[in-house]
Image (cartoon, rainbow, N blue to C red):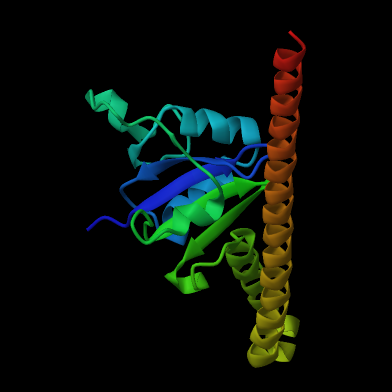
Length: 197
């Protein structure tokens, strides 16, 4: 059974997201792990997305199973107004990945459909592996305290991300107001020119 996902990136100096659909292995240890380990810079992510929707993601663009390779049409990337639009229930997949400001974000039911850094998932695993490798750490490691601290930090990250998103949305609205005022000014000058002629 397929675990569907959507993969995209936020365009620089914009809220708009360019994204594609991926049919298989969308879970964090599937698509998430490949994105985190193999697609860590914007140019590589743009190249990955540029070929459109895919059946399955691989570690290289050349190996990725894109639908266009099968002769499918209408599989080009789609542009969304912002990353929240990707969470619209009408189009939302089980996992949504967005590359923004140099990091991968993920949203799913597991994250209450809020975008959180994908690195959290893998950094915690690495720390757990490192902690269990030495006998000294094994004996002093308190699992409950560790997860309480992880939860505390994760909540702070989520709160900060929401503030960033709200700020970006506010800036976007202000930009719309400025553009509207510029249009009004242009129309006023056009009317004045017509009256003068």
